[in-house]
Every structure is written in structure tokens, then in C-alpha cells.
Image (cartoon, rainbow, N blue to C red; front, side, top):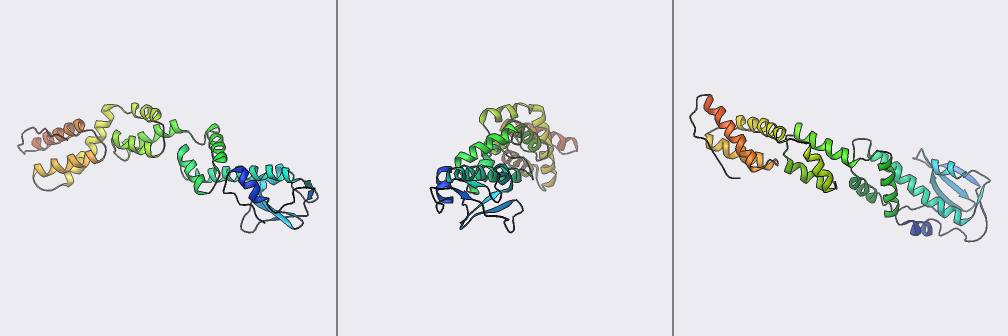
Length: 245
């Protein structure tokens, strides 16, 4: 019998240990490493078996000859899921930072119970592996500087990642209007220069492009007027253009 870690703790205890006798002492008769898993072990209690993470096995001294009652094993089942969830959480953080909501979503996909998810997310936050305020700040700066996205776009992305509204507001406050305008102008100028044809076509396509990237309408108008002035300075005559977006 192998532990299934896919429900709330009470349900898991019942499912994982359903074949174990309710009364009497259970002595470990053999311990073996689980195939294709370096950190999980199969614990044999005569005809009964369960699997646990190596850290849990060591913590509870699950070695040959030691004895447990079913209540002890029920506690170990919960501890094992908690450890499995924590290890899965660390693995999910290896490639890049994650938000608390992203982590919770990931653990649900791994069929971890909600009680354990809450505990593991809190632990990761306490250990600063998950830091939503820092995540929001760095995300906003990176999207503005490297991806050339406006505040409206950034706000929507952070919402989708489960960042609290107050944290989003704080992160966006760090972006000055001057910085956002500089980003809009840089990406707008690049788009403008790529478009062939009449100026009216350039300003229409560039304006729509900037709006899609989350820059506000008034800022888009500023950028278009600057680009028109640059165009005129190169020898093309054009009246100042003001466009509603």
C-alpha cells in the first residue's frame, strides 16, 4: 500500500493507512529506497507499507526495529505531505521567482491539500523565498525597462499573478511619469520608423501599438506629437497632430 497525497490531511490519513490495523504496535521490518526517487523510502511493517520522504524518515526515526502505533503514522502522513509540498515549492522556485498565488496554484496542480498549501506558502514567505512586494516592484521595473510596457499593462499582469492591489499600487508608484514617457517614446519611435507610407498611416499604427502596450491615451498623444516634430525636423511638413485614444 502506497501513500496517496491528494486530499485534506484527515482524508489522507484515512486513505494512506486504511489497510493498517487500528490497534496494536507496528514494527518496521524493512526500509528500502524507492526506485526512481533518491529521497523517498518504502517503510515495511510486515505486510503493510507506506512511503515517506527521507527527511521525514530521519525526523521520526523510521528505522528497522522501531515501533509505531497507527496514530503516530497518521501524524507522519501529514508531515510527509507537508515536506513533499515544501520540496515541490522549492523546485518551482528554481527557475524564477513566483508569487504566493502562483505557488498555491502550482501545489494544487500537484494535488496538495489546501491546509498544507497554506502552511507551505506561509513558510516560504517567512523564509523570503516568496516576497510579493519585492516581486511586484521588480516586475514593474523590468516590464517598463526591458519590455517597454505601460503601467496599465503592468497592472493587469500583476493582477493575474495574484498580487494584492495595494502592492500593485506601490510598485507602480515607483515608476515616474518621466520614465514611462521615455519608455513609450523609445518603443514608439522604433515602431514609427518601421512603418512605411504616409505619415497618417504611421501615426495611426504607432498610436494603436502604444495603446495595446498599456500606455495611457494622453501619453500616446504626447509621443505622437514628438514623433511628428522629429519627422518635420527631417524636412517633412506636417501640422501638429492631436488624436483621441
